[in-house]
Length: 151
Image 1 (cartoon, rainbow, N blue to C red):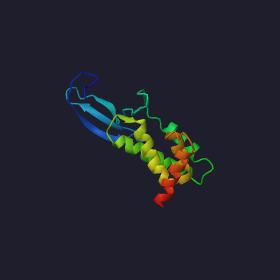
Image 2 (cartoon, rainbow, N blue to C red):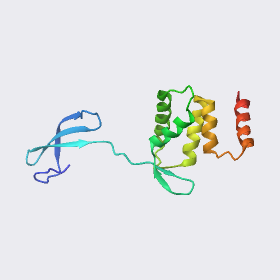
Image 3 (cartoon, rainbow, N blue to C red):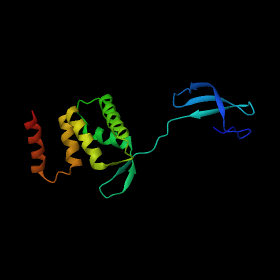
Image 4 (cartoon, rainbow, N blue to C red):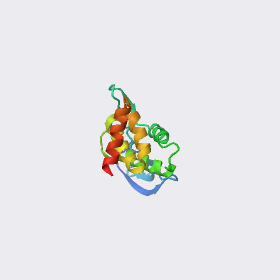
């Protein structure tokens, strides 16, 4: 860290503590050249995750957009907001922990579908019908048969 007073590169850390929101670490430093003290803040670098759509355009991952789609699928179903929040957190964590800066909308949709199937089968079919673009009643019935066959 370069001293803001004399420009010297070497310093020592006198004190470290988290900020009020625990979103950063506040460090008091002392320049080893001029002995003046200064404060720095250290926080995690957050790089946006991009979603590559089917038409090859890119959008920043938006957890609220994901939550809105799940809320529509779970409308009038016995699924709590807490369960939906956990599901979104789980998917967001999975995407962030993959260390990839881009995820395809197809990969994201498959993650959602696999988690939603465990949570509520009706919501799963609703989401799948939009996501997989069921063209007619036969594709809808095929999906229902898969669910029944899994039981």
